[in-house]
Image 1: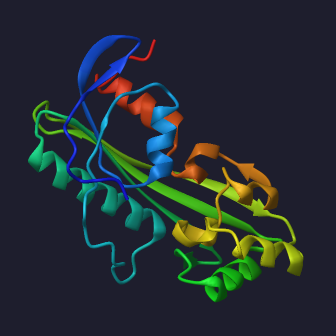
Image 2: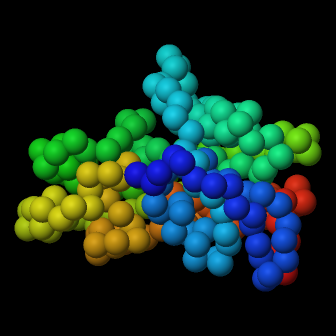
Length: 209
């Protein structure tokens, strides 16, 4: 997990100073996606209670948590743009969290094998000082191929499954099992970049081009 003691830096696109920008997430995948665009930002994870509420749908859950995370960091840095997100993996109405050990990782792979599951990401963009903000969500569908016992055993013996919702990484070794992605690929990684950047640009927080 990245350090929470980070100095706020300014977001710069193509050399143009636009606004303070904070990623309110400890996820290395989200950080890598934004770094890949050449953006400069600070990482300040928001520690919130991520428990589910009774009767809460996956969409309601990820959007609510993204709002809570954004609100927490905005209260500390009211002049900065804050991006927060929360992602869950769902199959047959069941939320798949991060496997704690090899046994749980095997069970998840058994469950996912040969099926289509959904990846939900709720995200929030907010600048308290500017009085601007938006929250939304993206859903992608992922088909995992029918996995052999050898493939499952190989994967659970890598380090990948254990800090990933759903127990696999589409951008890593786990790519071998992903037969098809319907919707945003980067959403499956952890952040729907196209949608997030469109919203951020429309709010006046960044100008990429």
